[in-house]
Image (cartoon, rainbow, N blue to C red; front, side):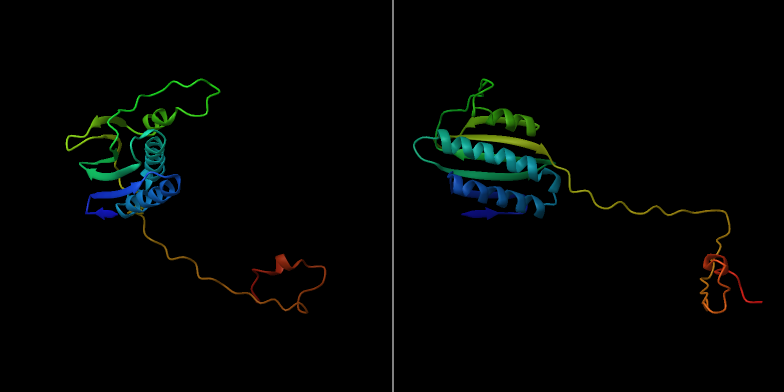
Length: 180
């Protein structure tokens, strides 16, 4: 289920691998709608990591809610699930293939955290990004000069009759000369 308002979007889902890509596309579309295109890659990566953690660790089920909120120049993405255990950042060894998700979220966001839900069992894990609208094409500067404006020279077409030009004379030398 998806619901959204002017500055708030909520998506309920099962955190299954097949659904995570779909949520990434929803987040991307919502940010485009809010004209926050520069944040799409970081928000999509962050929400992917948080949903992957729900899929991997949440107990007893994988039901969760993704909330995207734009308020006071800040985009906040939260993933809420029913597991009360707060995430703990890991320091994986160089050869380990998992355990870097929260470090990635920290790297792509300006702030992140986790809190117990006040309205029931579970937790919310969130990250935030400074929201700046997508850059618009800058207006072209208007130049004002004190010099008089000259009109551009008129284009001149010159037709060269190959029979009228002597053979040893290069055509380039004949172009631009006017018949007298």
